[in-house]
Length: 149
Image (cartoon, rainbow, N blue to C red; front, side, top):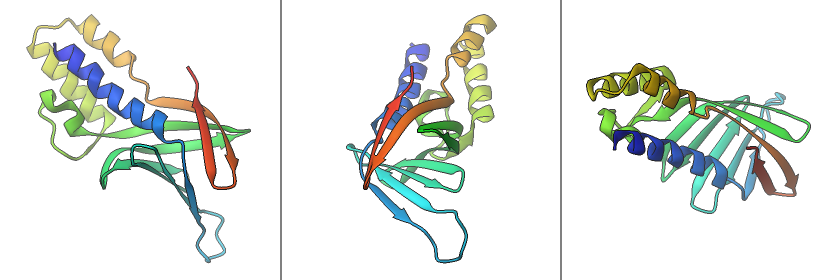
């Protein structure tokens, strides 16, 4: 049952990532620097903010994920470094962002206590998709993304 909850917990951030496909508001400071902040609002109210080489995904003011990204030739790659802990309520994590290494440790400890084998735990952790690549296009203020399999 705990393994199912874990996968449900991983599904939420993946779905949020996949749903960020609409509206763009570009704000470029007048400092002479080339860094800009871009905000995309998804159909479910999710907000993705890209600033410099970092991103943040939130919903209702609560940050769900944070990390870095890179782009090139209509491709964007996200590297998730932090995940909101209460997505994994069964692990006893609080409502804050945790570096992935802390989530990994909490997951391993929880499942060891429940009697799962190290092999099962390692295989489950390898399935996490902390690097997500998508092709994208921008038409005016509309972003269209297609996550790669």
